[in-house]
Amino acid sequence: GWARIRGRLREEVGEVEYRTWLRQMTLAGIEGEDAVILLPTRFLRDWVNSHYGDRLRVLWHAEEPSVRRIDIRVSATPVAEPALAGVEERPQAEAAGQPAGLAEPLAPRLEPRSTPESRSDWVVPLEARFTFDTFVVGKPNEFAHACARRVSEKPASPGFNPLFLYGGVGLGKTHLMHATAWAIRAHDPQRTVAYMSAEKFMYRFIAALRSQNTMEFKETLRAVDVLMIDDLQFLIGKDNTQEEFFHTFNALVDQGKQIIVSSDKSPSDLAGIEDRLRTRLGCGMVADIHATTYELRLSILQAKAAAAQVLVPPKVLELLANKITANVRELEGALNRLVAHANLFGRPITIDGAHEVLHDVLRAHEKRVSIEEIQRKVADHYNIRLTDMSSARRARNVARPRQVAMYLAKQLTQRSLPEIGRRFGNRDHTTVMHAVSRVAELMAADAGFAEDVTLLRKMLET
Ligand code: ADP
Ligand code: MG
Image (cartoon, rainbow, N blue to C red; front, side, top):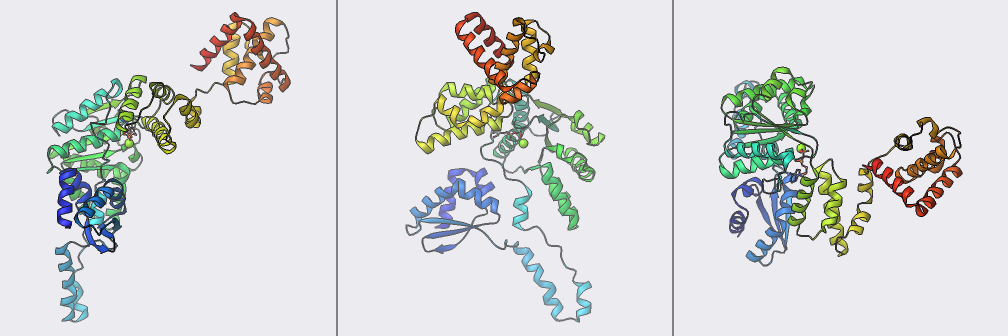
């Protein structure tokens, strides 16, 4: 039963996915209607549960109709490797026949080797959706993408080792690295690809130092074919870890192994990373991912909406692409929220709905205009002095622009009426209120004036 279920799953998901996630499953037994499956870590359990739980249940039920649920648990004590279990019994057996004092030096305690738990922990699992298929290419990232593709097809080719990817937060560095790892593994499953953040690298290194296991740390790392270190900027100021990474780096490159590193800064801007390491990091291929353009943001949204199989009106995608500009992760988050909302309430996504659901997000991304900026632009436009915004002069040619500035301050900032008054030469909030309604009246009555104010507003908003 179990062997057949595993076989089926293996066929369905493919070798790479199977090895990454499912190989370590063991069957603990059947408890009532539950098939109890064990995995060595919480992370694996959660992953398998959310990604393969349903499929496992269906396969089990087909195989064994009494099974209706799958219960995936973390195996309390990771099973030691068989060879090791045998060895560890020996000292006791020998000690039994010998005087206690002699036993110890003759039978030195063996260093505990890594358990399955620590090994699966060692190489961070790859995110299933970070593949080349799901990566949308546009002007800002096409070079980095081409380099990653190239490295995935021919690791360690001259000129591309190391590959150094850099760019701002949420622009796709991690996505590209995982995509490269997936592609390398798919192309040649025998290749070992190790991916981890620089932070993880450091903690592994410290743990190795503590348990006096640095040999194993070094050997494990130096045995991989491809090493990927994400967010290298984490090592700034961490001199010992940098030193260790430098040696690992050299050993791997000398053996013709590929290294891929990502960072939020270019090698030359990584102040706080030792010079010799920076030099080596920069001597392969350095590729930057630029800030997204409106076109790229729109294509990413279209791709994600299509993948989620939901209908999102173009106007809504345009709104998001316009407003959420800094970070693809946030863009994605906003779209996900709309989709979740639509699913939850069974309503189609509309532009009004989008404004409502994303109220807070859109507001946070609105351009912030300061009162000072408004005063400057308005004074400029009407050709008066900036100081007249706060002066007591009441001449029409000064008073009217001041009112316009107050009106715009009310419209474009979150400031309260008293606060606005204070910034306009300590005027009363009723003066501001009067200015706001006066300008609105004039706009309704005088098209030329209205056009003026609208133009000013546009200038301030963009
Ligand atoms: P970084 O590592 O540079 O901070 P990530 O790789 O984690 O950024 O990307 C953040 C999110 O944005 C991820 O969910 C990723 O899939 C998505 N993303 C970024 N760039 C793209 C792109 N060009 N196409 C599709 N998704 C993207
Ligand atoms: Mg990242």
